[in-house]
Length: 94
Image (tube, rainbow, N blue to C red; front, side):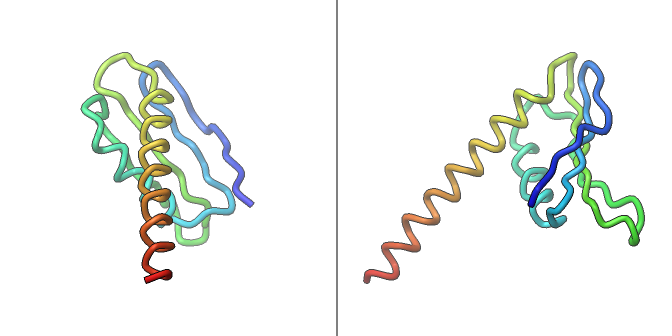
């Protein structure tokens, strides 16, 4: 079960820890964040091989809140997954 922890936050950046999730999941969000023109940095953090909880670092170009772009990225991922589900369901029927 996924549990999110806000590790650090300031005016234009944040670090979120994703407990119970894989680095692949966090990388998906990171890749989608890079599609925003407001993002200065987006990175999946793996601090040490024995520390298995992935973290996501987000930094905005200006004094903007990273939450807005994170929510938009998640909505785009949801739309992509819904499209995949439709196409997969159709492929199974064909």
